[in-house]
Image (cartoon, rainbow, N blue to C red; front, side, top):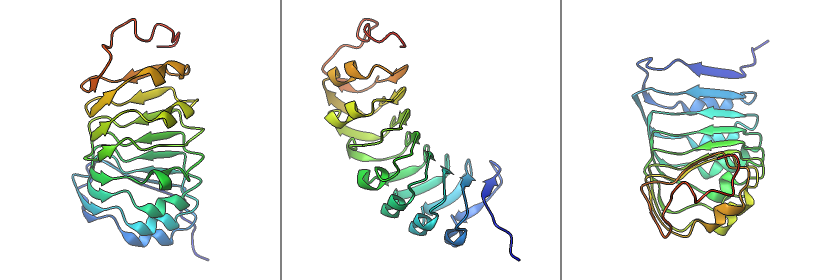
Length: 197
């Protein structure tokens, strides 16, 4: 009888070279996949990873991954943690991410993602980091719907406009907004109504 693989954890700086193995898509019982801090892992995230329907944690931080986040991720509706920070990703589909309705933490900072901020509809999200990308435009009204959000990082982008939408997000405890082009001056008084910040 064959063994059931539920967790894969490749230790950091393991001198792994090449692309992420597409064959992992056959591990249908996989719950955790951590392949991070591998300086020589390149290419795109295989679209076949959308077949990993039991995946709850995907941590691919600090590799050299490029291209868009696969639209096939819309099938990963058990995901609670998606960490793709510190790569070279260039695109994201909010429609795909929004199918992950159990998602609690989404880390996409330090990539190369351009365009407007995605309109996320993730009721269980408590951590969202989009820092150090190439996002432009204003904060979408949909952001106010992230009512459980505790940490929001939007710093080091090219964002503009008003921050008023954040005033109603009362669960926020950590907010990073610097190095953008907001209409507001951000000072200690801006979040005076937030007891937790």
